[in-house]
Image 1: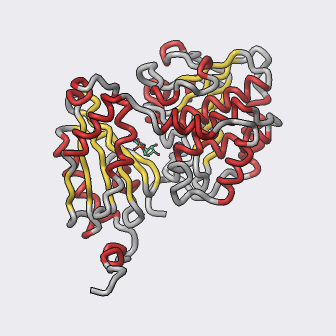
Image 2: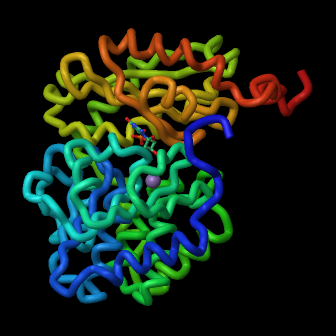
Length: 358
Ligand code: 5GP
Ligand code: MN
């Protein structure tokens, strides 16, 4: 394993049993707090709300879901079932009987809510990052899982909660988010089997995907055009595998009247670049603070880069918070790329071979 501190093995039978016990032992009037990572994406929100709806079916009445930072749900997720479970972080139970964390590789991803790991009676962690630091008390961390929602489905099943359309929609949004709509490597037969179980509840994949992935304000379309127009291609970076990157400032967002979360989809346009293995979007969060998204097509372990710069993630999708100017942040990434090239393979050379004789 190239990065992270965790092991690649998934939960043991004892881990599953401990998690089931932790949920079953919540007293009838007990308080359960669900927390997902800061700047929640589809897997974070979908896993958390899907599990919350399952707990509701089990009869848990004092139940909150939250995430650190501004209490703002990105527009693509406004149709998710279970949104009524959400409370602002400032209103979250200070000392719940059980806290459950979703899709967070490290305690720092819980922001100001990190203290709940200590104040809660029990802390249960559901995640799928190989870099998971094993914070909290009970760990259901499966690096082989395509999404945290795979772990959620496993736990709901062991708790005897059947899938209904509400739970299924949440878990489907999570699964499609983290597999890039069934395009990424993690899309195993088991992923499609899970998707089949979710779809069998009657949810409508076309409607869901349009809302979550294919729907944005015209201002965001124009903003994307501008930000993509300033992308830079650096073929020599990452030992010749190539880097493509761009950045977006708070001023860009303001000029186009857009909220920061619209930039989350930008990496998908940048990473299409044929001439680069590594892609990067540097998104301004504050004066000298940037949220960085990194992707690789397979020649570079970008989680190594992210971990070296204080973040985390998966081999081919990772991120971190950068300080200084955008140029300084990108310079630090360049400095880590050569060490993160996987094996000695020559993927770039292979890609240059023409299919036609010259
Ligand atoms: P994204 O680029 O979509 O924000 O994130 C890609 C992956 O990197 C996700 O698995 C996400 O959890 C992880 N990631 C993104 N930013 C950070 C960060 O600041 N810290 C850590 N530990 N992981 C991050
Ligand atoms: Mn995830």
